[in-house]
Image (cartoon, rainbow, N blue to C red; front, side, top):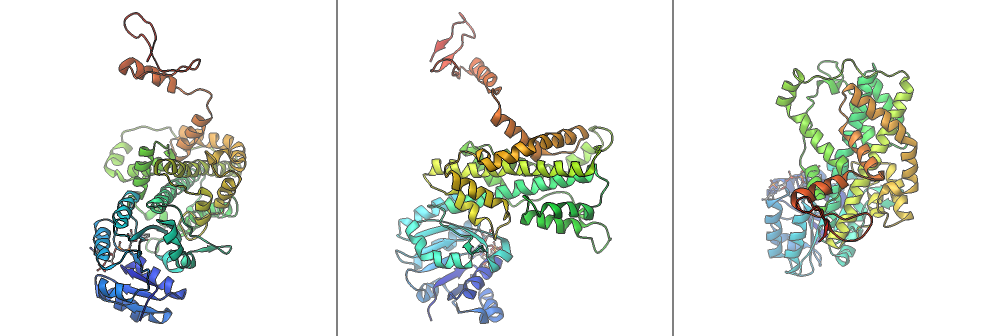
Amino acid sequence: PSAQIGVTGLATMGHNLARNLARHGFSVALHNRTQERVDALVAQHGDEGTFVPVSSLEELAAVLERPRRVLVMVKAGPATDAVIDDLAGVLEPGDIVIDGGNAHFADTRRREAALKEKGIRFFGVGVSGGEEGALNGPSIMPGGDREAYQALAPMLEAIAAQVGGTPCCTYIGPDGAGHFVKMVHNGIEYADMQLIAEAYDLLRSALDETPAQLADVFETWNSGDLESFLIEITVRVLRHVDGATGRPFVDVVVDEAEQKGTGLWTVQTALELGVPVSGIAEAVFARGVSSHSGQRERARGLLPGPAGRPHVDDRDAFVEDVRKALYASKLVAYAQGFDMMRSANERYGWDIDRGAVATIWRGGCIIRARFLDRIREAYDRERELPSLLFDAYFTQALVDGQEAWRRVVSLATASGVPVPGFSSALAYYDALRADRLPAALIQGQRDLFGAHTYRRVDRPGSFHAGWSGDGQEEER
Ligand code: NDP
């Protein structure tokens, strides 16, 4: 028997991707370190397509059509390195290794370079959509050799989510570009979730309404600009009632948000690239604050806040204000995330097409949303748009929303409801549009204590002021 593609690593993700491939008519060789997973897949789902079970990597290499294609879906980190090393021993030049795990893009760059020396073509592929997406259509972000992509495109594009006949999979760029884009996706996901949570918190603090009633608000929002998977699941979570107590589910869940680390990677990378992703960073920090239960416990009895809850005169007007604040903040967070791709293109010599990224995020992945069509259109209008906020559609949304945004942040601040996402997005917006920033003062401070020099508004050059001595400015 022969197979068109092999999958090694048949835990949740590999298992489901293998089935997805088979259901689309591709013959799939199955391999896993522990044989039980291979046998279980064949026993339970063997009738879904053509599976070729194997029990060693040598056997895997023997049954695959050339050039061989092997999808690695094992635990990220050292396990992935170990499996890739073993694979390299049984593959030949021209063969293609695809890492569909959650690798850091720097690891992908390293692995790609190492395998290239052996003539093996390595792909780092971001897969979003979790267990369900892997089976029924994820969003797929492949990075690697463009020519080798031709050998993968028919498979990856077939198993990806489809939106209006367009697959949620496209070639992203060389080496680590696919995993980079997947990382940015996850960072944006953190920001989006935080912003939705802040909107909920504000509504709940200001209005005397139950989570189920607030679910209705989010449901209404889901029929407009904010329509998205994350708003949809927010409705479900808010409506959910705890079976044991009959209380709203959100009220019985410990309010400490956990994280697996891709938000951290996004922010670390953004810091290195010098791209301000304050919305994503605040979202990561907000999860951190929530988890510091000891400090929160002590602060509760110690640190004062304003008396009473936020006061709202007109309920419906307030709800609309929060909706606009949420949308404006979301625009900023997405603009910041897409800005990381612009910067990575410069740093790594990639050519990530941001409009194409918006297109493949419209289905399969966690941040899938109607809004991504607006982003795609923005990049259609201007491929190298320096910031999404400059596109006419987004500018208009900010014109329409900025007063509401300010009212919401003011009310939250005055009444002690934490809105780090809303307020940092607004601060970014105001900083970007400011005539003058106090960065001039910082330059003065730097020059005074460290002779770091400054530039002048009225003539070119670098200068150092005469802080001591004769007081004369000198050109450096
Ligand atoms: P896990 O991350 O839990 O990994 C388990 C798999 O890795 C098993 O097949 C296991 O084999 C294999 N494995 C672990 N160590 C080794 C090793 N040293 N040598 C060989 N095989 C090893 O599986 P998931 O399916 O959850 O995820 C797979 C990848 O996909 C990960 O990188 C994950 O981060 C990523 N991912 C996961 C998503 C999700 O929602 N779960 C979403 C998107 C990506 P054995 O059966 O023998 O133990």
